[in-house]
Amino acid sequence: MLQEVIAFKNTKCECGHQNPVGTVLCEACGKPIEEEDRESNEVLEMRYDGMARRSQRANPSIIDRVWNFFSSVKIAVYMIILTLIGSMLGTIFPQESTFLNIDPSTYYKDTYGTWGLVYYKLGLTHTYESWWFILLLVMIGASLVICSLDRVLPLYKALSKQRILKHMQFLTRQRAVYQGPIEGSTEEWLKQVSIPVKKKGYRVYTEGNALLAEKYRFSRWGPYVIHIGLIIFLLAVLARGLPGLKMDQHIAFPEGEIKHIPNTSYYLKNEKFTVDFYTQEEMPEEFRNKGKMLPKLFNTQATLYTCTANCNDPTKEPTLAEVAKHNIRVNDPMSYKGLKAYQFDYDMTPVLRAVSPTLVDSKTGKELGEFKLDIKNPQRIYTVGDYKLELKEKYNDFGLDENGKPVTKTPNPNAPAFLFLIKGPGLHAEGMQYFYFPKEIDKMRFQQDAINAKLNGGVPPLTFKVNGMQNVDISMATTYLNIRVDKVMPFIWIGASIGMIGLVLGFYWQHRRIWLRIDDGVLTLGAHTNKNWFGIRREVSAILNKMNLDVDEKSLDNGGKNA
Image 1 (tube, rainbow, N blue to C red):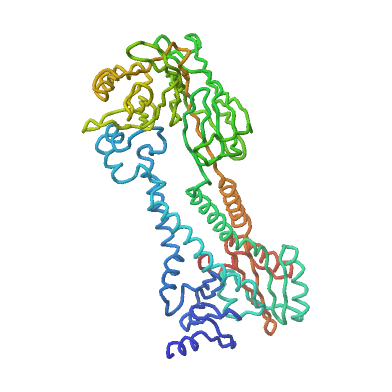
Image 2 (cartoon, rainbow, N blue to C red):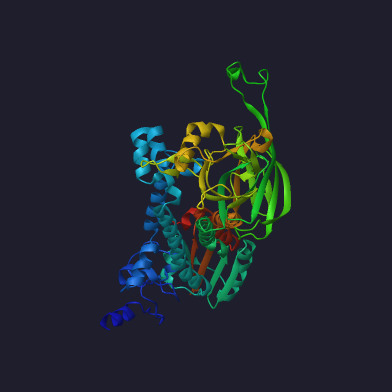
């Protein structure tokens, strides 16, 4: 209670206005509040017109302490410096996101040695998605918001409720000051001086023996407009981490295959891939006769589909509707409703898509029937003549673990393998197991016949064979497309545009004010601007010269620094 009484007494001006704690200049007349400030002759601190801010409370609570932390410009600068350092650390080695398919735990050590391993262990290989980097961005955003609110509200209050008649000490302690006698009546002189002042673009307000001229007040909001733009920009950048708002993936599309684009309702088909190579004559000198083939142009004839039915039902084929066609080339992507598909790379290695094996009786060699086995999406049950083939296991990239058990090493179909349970005439009631490797090289490498002999205690009664290449579906080329969806980019541009408007407001205009009062035939004038003091001194000198007061602009300088 005692502290509140002291604060009340210390902030009440002699003009009768009660000012909040932390006020530097009286909100009404502009006289300094503190006794030591009244006795000084230095130029006044005009930042926020001396208004109190929340961060200046005498007895801050926990919330106020958090507010004070984020409202500090010094803290904001530290956070920006830390973010810049973090950004630079993220550029020492390539980020994981720049690669299509690597094992980062081994890649960085193998490629960059010990420093690469340290870089990976510190988590710098995914700097821009790390929790600490995102936290720094969030803290910068919080600082922008709180800094703005802490300053813009007092500034708005000060500028929207300006008193025309100011205390004499307020005027004489501005940086640009003039005092001298005038001729004629006060009312007539104020009326006459208003004419040249208005010609300079000022708005003029009078009250008794005082005048206030002001122009370009809007420029004071420039820094806060920049803050708004930066806040929108940061929110947009952070929103990119939310599902569905941004995607940047590199996806392989084998020729002739329709493939789903993850996290969207779209499917894309690589209708045909073509590549043209430079001839030896067209190649640059340094590449000629070195056995290298340089691509001149590679092109993906792509068709984009959207799913219209059965989109989330894995047991049914999705119903697709064609929405776009485009020949995708480098720097000429397919674009449809915010989704862009860029040509990124290609692979001319043939890819097995499907095979149609024939079920054969091992003893007689009789062919019992044929079925089509899709490598990527095989059926669970096949019926071949009188036999039923149930797919028990599928291995995309077949391998054996340390215990000799079959495993899938990677999700890529490098060495596909299928384990069937076959039931039908001449077989045990529980059926027979059969391991099938569609690729001939895998049959030999993993010894398909030996595996099946072990599973069945000898030569299995049934086997698979492929009758000719007409029963093999091979994609001769695979194109890699960079699929991008960025729904927040418009907001990034909006934030950047608002920030640019704030820069223009703050740099190309200056808030200028001139106060004057006449007491017993003596004119006292004070002028203030947030920058370009030479300009306002020149304007004041020109105005006074119009009133037959010969004043050199340099004589108006009252010392001090820009406020």
